[in-house]
Length: 138
Ligand code: FES
Image (tube, rainbow, N blue to C red; front, side):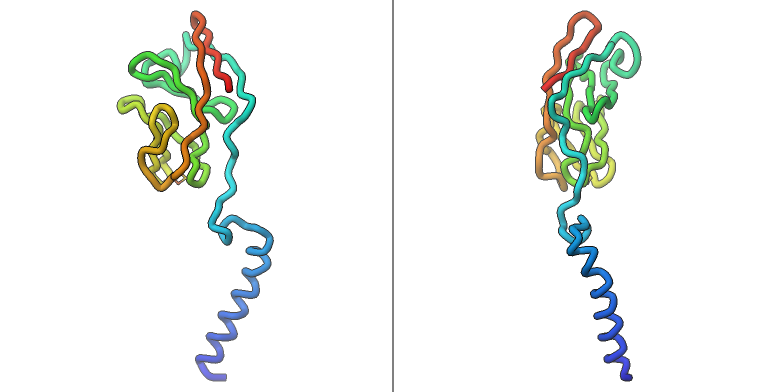
């Protein structure tokens, strides 16, 4: 067997091993990665008198939603899963934007993409403050 024949056989063998995985719909083959979908039917209440939301620029994640208190003292809520490959985004309080630490995507406070590689916005949710009780809902 020549070197060329060996490489061709090994290469074909490796392809044959990977083919079933690709046919099975693994994300690494399709180019589209499966990740948590944006939560729907969101409706929960948080106490903002203590914890992360008691401080301007603070944030927390609840039920797949990232809730943040901006420096302007407003509450915002968007889906916590980056639309690129699903990593959990963070809120950068000092700059009032969402940031994905995995590949660096950035989103505005409304969830709109401001920097790639993400191309789709984060789902946004409504907030309503009643005293120290913050309702987050769809
Ligand atoms: S997973 Fe968020 S930028 Fe890639």
